[in-house]
Image (cartoon, rainbow over all chains, first blue to last red; front, side, top):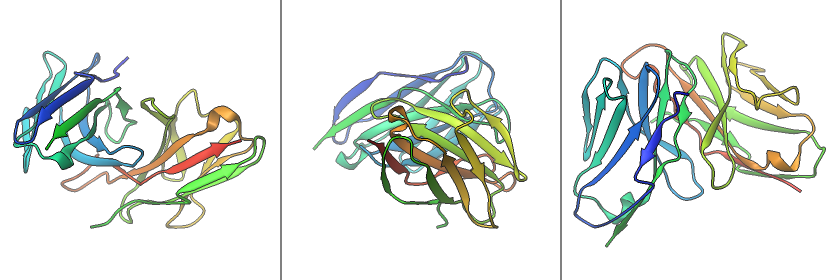
Length: 111
Length: 116
């Protein structure tokens, strides 16, 4: 299975701290995407990182990919209460192929 | 910013009834997807669609499911005879096969289907 698995399952931090979430997968991928989901809401696309990339940034988000370890991490710097949500990684093994989601990390940022 | 839209936001139906969930993908996107998320569970792939045909489907996507692109803008998921276990949030997604954001799958807000 190429299924992504996130850890930790739950993370609770204070506002202003950094949050790091990890994703591991089992087979070679074409790309990996990170999404945010607020409770009962839709999936918001955060970042896509391709298999030939090692790091990408978007605002306060930093994503790394280590294909040798089959893992990725999402770092949110200077977290805010509004960052409270579930975060999912989704892997795809072909261009435009289906995404396989992990169980997600539930992040709580306390004001 | 362009976005994927879905209607209705919430659909309640009786077991055995047919439902059609509607999606309008981002206009220049060519790949379309349906996923579902049962409450408290992970997001699961159902089907992908390209060039007016199914390109991939999961085990979940059995004969009671079908997809259609009836015109140049809509993408629909039909469930012929709903079961209680079809209750879930259904997400439509689309992606662009070219350009700087190629392969990024953008999701709609979802349709919450409740089967009674």
